Image 1 (cartoon, rainbow over the protein chains, first blue to last red):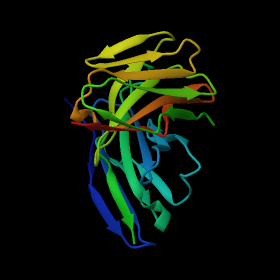
Image 2: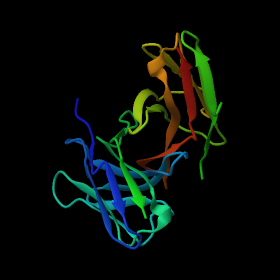
Image 3: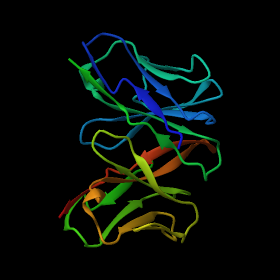
Image 4: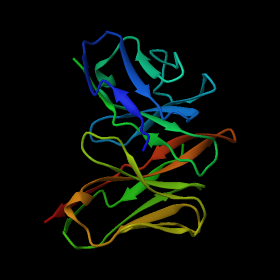
Length: 115
Length: 115
């Protein structure tokens, strides 16, 4: 069964450094998402992406965050200057279409640790 | 914004017991999703509900979409040790009437099953 893949599984970065998290969504999916889960807390929406542009973003997704689909398969999340509070699991998800009967499928996440 | 409240927060049960957990919202959701998350992995979709009153099963799991569209429950029958994990309810929220499908998650129910 096709799945969403994320790399790396764990990223350790010094505070202030840039980090890029990578995702390969399911190949025929058109809607892409990033979510964040701080340890012990619920999953929180960051951003949705459709037709090569951001369709919605949360308050968490400030100017330090950006997303890109550089080619036909990858979907990346960049944090320009990381802060300690960016430490979390970051999940990528994708969805085939806009119909309500097409739920999102999640990758296994990247654990981001900021030192 | 829309919020989902799950109860109980955690459950400790013996193998073979049945489990029931629920999710409530102060506002209407048109779709209810139940995900399971195991350590080090992303949320995996268990059951999707699309119509008020709908009752859907997936093996030993049964979920119902409340008639008011403000609640849902998930039952697990005859629990086994591999049912251990965090169970999240989630629902898509609309942005200005469009459906880019950003998901709002509940805070999760942690299930522990003793052999």
